[in-house]
Length: 225
Image (cartoon, rainbow, N blue to C red; front, side, top):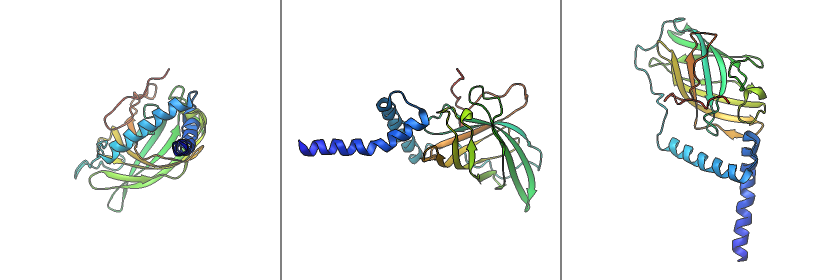
């Protein structure tokens, strides 16, 4: 009996840091219930990753690269954290491409948008790049540390600081670009982002942004309240 009680006490103590992390990010009114949901979702998603349940980010094949400047423009960019995939952090991303070392590279400027309407700019923009594109259009873009204002964070409303890497494919006509996200949130808590995704859709009408999608399958984000 004493041994059983000791095990329960140890397990409860081990769960406290994770429970605190989930509460900080999601702001739970029911910590035990939310933690159970978080733990189950985290296990499912990581098993999906390990089992090869990828997001379709394979190469586009030789000859898929656009001409420099041909696909430049603004995109509706959704970063979907695995912990709450249907509530993405949303940006307008201004994409530019240029010839580089006999190939092609791209750069982007990220402008965070308010979570409440996924439209109103908030906080400073961030310039990233250039990043090289392989012949088949694949890329790995290691972004610098990005700070997301609290009103652009739909999960908790807290300011986020993260260092992320985008892995995907950019092929002509590049109206839709998607892939995987890895990296770490360092503030307001430490969180491994493995299993997260991104999707960006070309903006053709600045007065009406595209519907928010969260991955290469074009699964929709949760509608705004």
